[in-house]
Image (cartoon, rainbow, N blue to C red; front, side):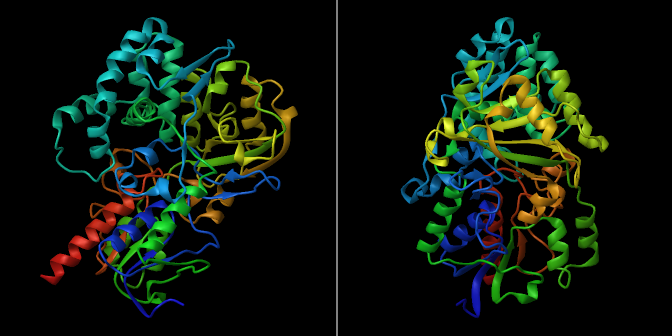
Length: 476
């Protein structure tokens, strides 16, 4: 049974909420985590979505930023059951001619696949990959004056551009342009939008520097390890405990909310002044995901055999096609040929399905709150690059935006980034206050704060550090 008071209460048990709780517990505080659902983990959970014995990642599936996370790397997660599984290559991008571009761990090997664009690719990425340790410390953090301005400037001069501009300026041929476009499309921004290139750069650099690993046994293993460590520190967690108002919570010195602005307005209404609520109401949510899972009786039959080297496969063809697909949701449209991000975990982790069987995971971007069924279009894109895919389907599960939000209230309208990650909102999320709110002792620690979306825990870590710093100041 929960106590009547705690030093810190965290609402929400996603990776950021758990990171905030662990950070507070490491400081010697008594901590309670409240979770609305019957399982913990937020965007890092698993379930048998298709048939018994087929274990699917409900939201996130591949973790370059989880492996890179400066906070996660301080925790003994491998000793608590978290095993990172590395495919032979981080990424494959098939093309209509039956070939595929492979993002290898080695920059030189990747460049060799890009013909006359190989030299340009090496010039762009070799120095950045060499500075990844420095860059990740700055990029996975709230805005601040850089400790290594030269390293950040080399990155920033390219990152500030649109992905389309970088693709056309740096590369001459379809293969390199398509590879970079697919990487940048993870942003959900139109590829013509400023800073969309930053997402392509970060994901490519991380792929070369640390890889794009899976969590062995599924996403739930990340959450299990974090919760186990929190409990070793004395922290508590309550499931099936939705919070409709801050007044429902036990007494505490600080409250850390792993929620987005929309939920913060609702549960914090009595404590938030009108001017702050108005700012939260202006916060913008971005395109949504239409997500699918399949139970398969055999591996996906790719036309390009190299696709079996990677857990992650980008399905979208050329730069022009990907750009058109990513513009569509911003116009309220559904791309006839969507850019599909697909993961095939069981090629590298057989524990996720019965012997000889497989699973696949995929999503595309759609307008926020869309009700349109993208099943045929997603499967059509897979079939385009893997003829016979549909013949291998045993069962399928579709999660449109409304089901994603029902599963996790932070996925507002199906937006899995916690809000639009453009220049206006990337560095001042959700307001210029960042993690702090005008309500005494109340902080926000979700992906709606810097550094934004992804399973890395850094939003929760920095929110907790902010709260701990304010508490020390108040006690002086």
